[in-house]
Amino acid sequence: MTSQPNAKAEMFILNDDIDMKVKIAAMERRLEELEMNQMQEVQAISQTPLQAMPCAICRSYEHLVDECPTIPADREMFGDCNTYNSNWRDHPNFSWKPQPPQYKQHVQALPQPQSLNKLW
Image (cartoon, rainbow, N blue to C red; front, side, top):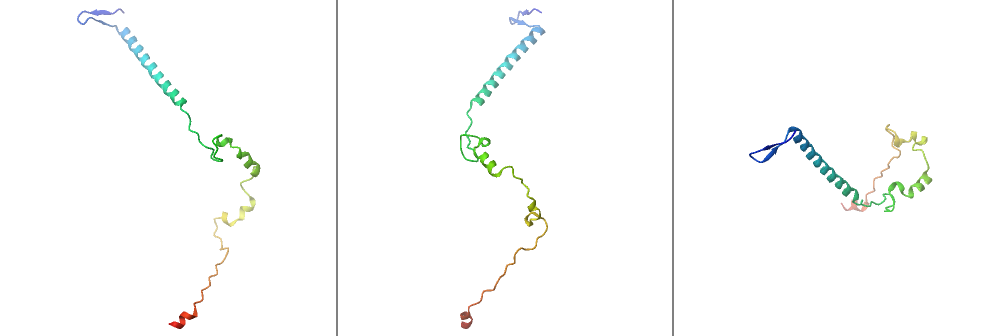
């Protein structure tokens, strides 16, 4: 497990064990460098300020939509009202059946002026 000198190039020839350990150490250093680069990218992303968006309900920049102060007022006005009304069951607008016309249009012919007929 000792290295042997090479007389021609004045270099040491490493045994397989040592060569493998050197490769693993180089890979570890490279992996640590990649991890550090990714950590710096994550920190840079997390430090960028978010763009302020107004509340879609009241156009205020002071709160988010879920925290809008007008929502409790709406709930107080409408409460937990049902979305279905049993009176709507027979309403003609909510049916697929053809419905008879609800009104008749009375069209009257306009009387022609008598003066034009006399000229011709």
